[in-house]
Amino acid sequence: MKSAFNKKYFTDLKKLKWAHNLKGLKKMPPIVLSRHDETDYIHSYGENSPFFAGLAHNEILGTRCRKCKTKFATPRLSCLQCGTDCNWFLLPKTGRIHSWTKCYFGGESFLKETPYFLILVEFKGVNSLLLSRLKGVKDEKHVEINMEVEAHFSKKPKYEITDLWFEKK
Ligand SMILES: [Zn+2]
Image 1 (cartoon, rainbow, N blue to C red):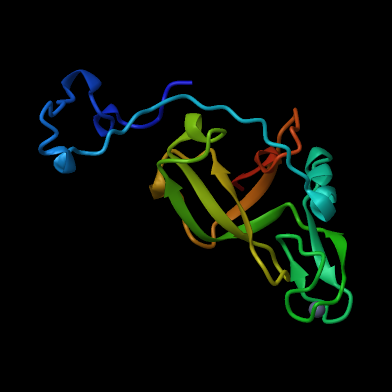
Image 2: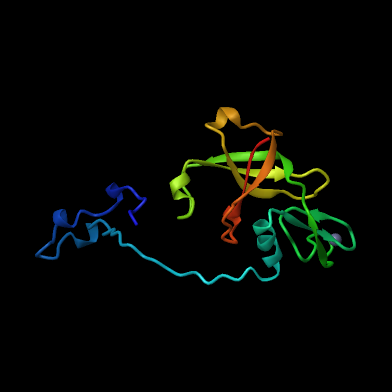
């Protein structure tokens, strides 16, 4: 993969000067190299697995505390308010933008899409927000707080958070 970083940050090794008398080595600028690295990630979703299975079935799952009834759009199997177990429930497929940001850099799976929009989605009657992407807007002039958005799901789910995004309703 081509490096996403600007080459100006890397040392030009052809221009690197060596001090044959060992003087001035303390003033040598740091040697900065770029090399490609690849890793296979082994990642368990643990008790959050139903959330990702839900996305593959065009559903967004949240959790609800059995005791204090707090509803979480980002699933928590233990309530952040009282520590009690939570149960799964279906979130609505429409919500409103609580806040948003435009990202000019991202992880490898997002690099091709930069710049892209991240939004915190607010669902009616739900006590926490869901972080997701906003697609289908040209620029920030078309993004507004409180704008109604609807969920879209990948037709070829990878069981990753990128299986879900939102678009203007
Ligand atoms: Zn609770």
